[in-house]
Length: 274
Image 1 (cartoon, helix red, strand yellow):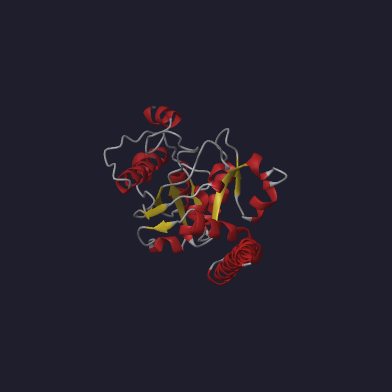
Image 2 (spheres, one colour):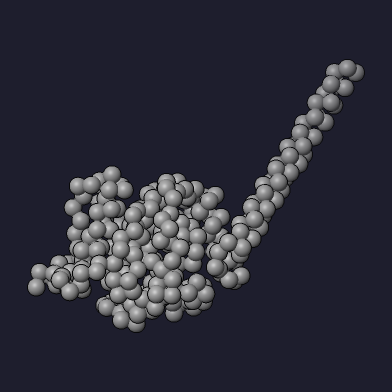
């Protein structure tokens, strides 16, 4: 009889244990989702209250903020310059498809990005990009319309984001060859370039890979580079090249690679040599 009682008790305990563990797991999962929802609501109201985003834009940017803080663990290694509160061109190195999100987090304001027209016309991405007020541009050559749009925005005191490398850097080098379009916009608009060095961007083979990767992204602000004033002496072409090279040297300093050999894109080198 005692043996039967002990056996029966053991069976009951074995049957009850999974249910208790399941209940505990469900409770923990529920608490986790409630925590995430609370964080999402807090970030949403911060976006609406502290930024110049519209309500619709805040809804679009909320996932970016949550991913940046919780998954990519974006942190800033110094304070942003005061120039970021007025019209400027934000210029960063480019290793990941989500780098614009990091610059957006750093700015804490709306940043207008130059985006290839084919993406703006895409049936899925187009409406989202237009809502984010991007600047459609033609990647096959010089796009005067997009340059004028960027100039108009910066003159209005807004921020425009650009990547001088023009493509993702998949090499082991700090920077691939750079173009001076960002400097040309800054010079014509009479606004500064604000360098940002992004370290630790997630990327693995495809543009979608960062969404499924954790990371620890550090962002360092450089010293704002004022527009070149002596255009009569060097000419606009040489001035824009000089300005973008100053940006690249700052990025090399921030990356602790001061001796890195910066190169202009081939077309820029050819034009500069004429």
